[in-house]
Image 1 (cartoon, one colour):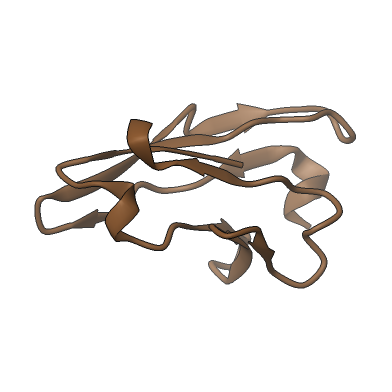
Image 2 (spheres, rainbow, N blue to C red):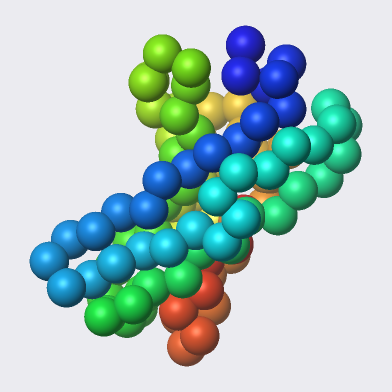
Length: 93
């Protein structure tokens, strides 16, 4: 599975003039270690959108991890913590 390799990679999304950029696009970590992902928005304000984090598996399937408002996909609540700082256009997982 994807977690056995300890490699996380999430892609930036672009819609019109709005662009999301994930900082540290690839990280290699040991199993059990904590890791933080951060995303920022250019050309728009996160306060105008619902922000989501997804995990992309090795076969391209997407698993929903988090939606702002403290809403988590099945099986993720105990292992992940998401937050949005709309005033700074920062989204963290």
